[in-house]
Image (cartoon, rainbow, N blue to C red; front, side, top):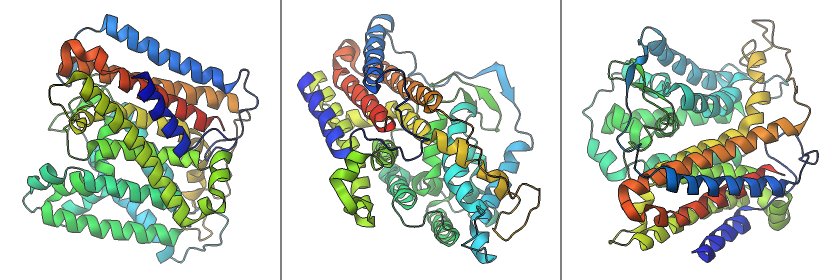
Length: 451
């Protein structure tokens, strides 16, 4: 068992990358850390192992499998006008992407237009990250749901499409969206973003008209399942009438439907962030050379990163199935435990993009005064520059380590609880391979960040 886990770990490190000196979205090196990076890696691994042992002793029965437990006495928030207003804001976000090139924004302008900040910082990062705390507010913010309502897209729901295809289409589009950001040339160009937004809007309206508004969003919209998965970590849930209720941390994750493609979707979320970090390391650049900087090389590297993470997870699922027996398949185990990877996907993303949000997000202050790069100064902030107020990498590094370790510990907790429900007395033994996978992913995540 240990030998198999080591093989999976080595495969992940060799294919995706190993520690270098650069970080894609960081603020500098780790040379000023008080102790070597290896100490952090070993410490994180020890934390996971100790957590696993403690759960084996102190958590003998499943506690999370009965789903959310709404406590209206603890917190109840009426729908009011805030949630409906989010739909209007969502439409404005899409318009903010389409408007710059249509209004003749100067591509050579040194001022940031609002489109890249809205897409790559606010929409892609801040919205889902906030959802992990305050619940799934993307449901109301979703501009394509709002547009579909206003266009009268009310065709009967073809729910069989979701049953048959699950979120495989969304997983493929997630990969495509990540490719546009990480590999595609000029991902911050207003014309490219506008073209992508327009094409995606037409695509979504077509799919919603064909399979139904809600089915179309569930199957084909990248951001609907992504925000639903991340927000399932939140202690805040919602009733049918829109009221927000307290449901408890993590309780909604085990209740996530086992859609076809669920495991693939989460693997893509982890693998694309892994690529973003690994591609900036000296080791990756040394192996790939100039080819790694080409569109083809980046595409292959991105696909390889997702593939390795997926194979490692499938392998751990296969080992668990063999350990338990009873005719279980690796695919079945992978589907049953896919939700346990969600905190890890969030941890990877938060740790990796923490400094990007802190610094690049400040461009929104300037962009709101001159959203289209036309020389405006509506609010007197157009000349505002980014304040790099963090001068040492130490506080960022400690925050990243805490996030990575916490995400994996939560993954261990969720996996242990599901194993108790599914495997009973074989629960602990069935999770050996998953534990090794969690340790490998933790190690890998820290090595990437330790450039």
